[in-house]
Amino acid sequence: MTQKQIVKTSKFLSLVLRHRPEVIGINLEAHGWVDVNELIDKSNANGREMNFELLQAIVKNNNKKRFAFNEDLTKIRASQGHSVEIELGYLPCNPPNILYHGTATRFIDSILKNGLIKGNRHHVHLSKDKETASNVGRRHGKLVILEVDAKSMHEKGCHFYVSENSVWLTENVPSEYLKEV
Image (cartoon, rainbow, N blue to C red):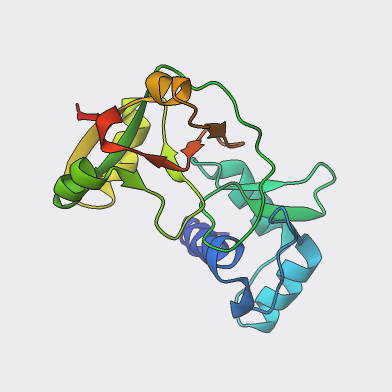
């Protein structure tokens, strides 16, 4: 398998496991899981070449750890970022004092006015380091990194969760907890 094939299939998995499972006729379980064999069969039936070895390579080598297998490798799911209704089962936890969010300069005025909102996703995504925030933000345009006062938010009763791939999640971040880095 080529790197190009891995990237193309990873993007396809993001589509069907996070946003539009109906594209290939699969249904996600309540926690986002789908049977691996069903995913492979329905992907292939819809013109997307897929096999177990390719899925293993994507799960193992994806630098953002976007996907995960269950313990016996019979099911797969996206770790976070869903726009479809699922319950990932993450429990609230204490965040670090400071978290970061990378974005593009074209969004900064709206963010500083309205805060970070989840939009059509389940949560706002945050990172514990500036490097990860930078990598995310650069995808959207000229980079701006925002510092999130997670400690104060948490003290005020806001809930934080951390995904299997170490992405910090929260419902929203009001503007008073944000500052440009």
